Image (cartoon, rainbow, N blue to C red; front, side, top):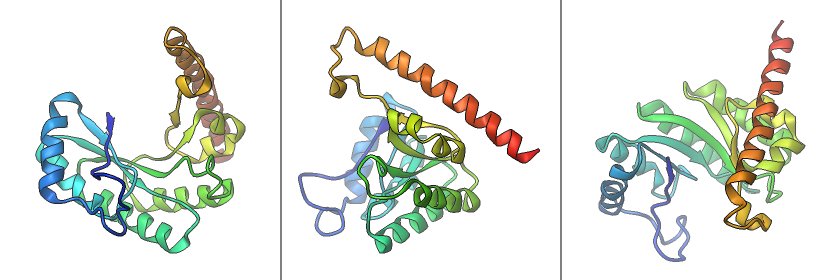
Length: 191
């Protein structure tokens, strides 16, 4: 899958950088031969146009809900993501927030409440996107999602290109174990 944001330049999508159907269709026509799925970071500001257009090209979509410090915006994002997941058969996941904990925009318990709300409202797997160490520091977050969407960024952590793959595999294995443990804990709670 590829991450996709249909914006140009530095404008803000809530104000002056609303993508057009033509722009999105052109982008997705270019991307379709390269991938089977795309990930979005928000569900408003024109991004809500993406899932039905992606369907034209046979692309699955992981819908995103941008979560920050602003409750009214968060509510619009959550509701739009839920609506997109319900109305588009090609939506294969919902990602509630992107590095929301890392940026300090929400507390863990508040983000988990949003994730649980979305999980009750859609028939697709639900997660959040966080840097890998956030998942390890907050196993309760892992226990609240359907899958772990971890950002592994060896370059930003000072690893060279020759170390990057090995470092990513090390982190993957740590997160895999975390997921296994979270699943075990969840199963115990349901007994």
